[in-house]
Image (cartoon, rainbow, N blue to C red; front, side, top):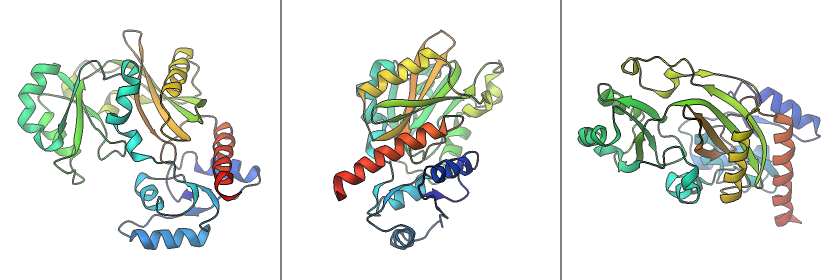
Length: 288
């Protein structure tokens, strides 16, 4: 089940692959502010409650569809994607583990001076949750107030737990897809070379990097993804982002749910095959 008009860079190809393997692929629009019960009823008119279904789309839609009785339905084990859940088992692999604290979003401005005294001239801020109430960003003392305000544009609750750390100098980022503990595919997706020296000119992470395509051919990134997959298992299918740094090290940036993750230049056929098998196995455990 694909959400309509989401992940337009690869949805058509995914649908083509699904159908080529003899499975159904249908799309469904997300209607903001529609009652969860209405969405569930609408969804289960497309696929019944006893169908083997995998959802792929936005987090907001996925959250609503968790209420369906589809198996597996949505690979979105929210608690498992919180930093507070995966930081302990992945500790020494993490990009921001060496020096971080957590605070409620509502106290960030009051703690501005303390934060820059502790972490230096550039700091990184992200939500504890994996559902992206705002996009993690790097900021400076000059831009801090505006950036924190912008992060809260979509009515971020004051008690939302956020992680604060010193900013890191990256080279590349990679996204891997993991199914049943096996790393299925990896893709390059962001390059940090050529970052401007004037860090005061921008704050949000995307402004200092460029998008890149292609399968991941970096063996060190692959190996780190495999190590992380052996240590942590949040879902039957999930994603992990790995970064290489300017000091030559490799680290886990974050993990995420499969159902709501961009796949970039990953091997879509291998992913469809692996996820479909995992979904069918899970369905058979219940209905056969």
